[in-house]
Image (tube, each protein chain N blue to C red):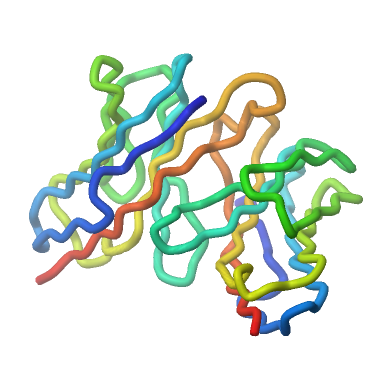
Length: 113
Length: 116
């Protein structure tokens, strides 16, 4: 079974803090993704990586950055957390062409106060 | 550009009744389509996928979906609902072209409630 592991299930951070969300997959997938999920808005793509050190902006990259130094790990960084970044964050991975679908982590619920 | 519309943000059925969750897509090329399920406080789990083989696709937990090109639809069905089917369901279409290949566009989700 492919596993995608997100380091934290729940996080509470203060406005202005730098926040790191970590994601690790164990199946040698090329692609990794970060989504945020908000009620009524579905899943929105923040960033995407298709190889080590390669990244591409998704639909809502503002206020976020990412890092992929190793194939199995994809980090999402909130440079200066704001209350409007309170959300559920989902990491996913897939083979390069993604045609088998994604494998998702369990999610990190982030609250910024 | 690809897009997905899920008709109905909430669907409620009785246990044992037919489940029908609607999904329409927009795509300029033959799409790859997926249904995912999300149980409370969990990530998304793949239910089934359409990748241009058979138009009727069977998935896990007794769900199936039919690809209808003429209607640009990919509705999810289950003949008899079970209480454990209560969850949120997402339809997704695979983007194509350039480095978009492999990225999915998700619908807004449909919350399924099953009552006794």
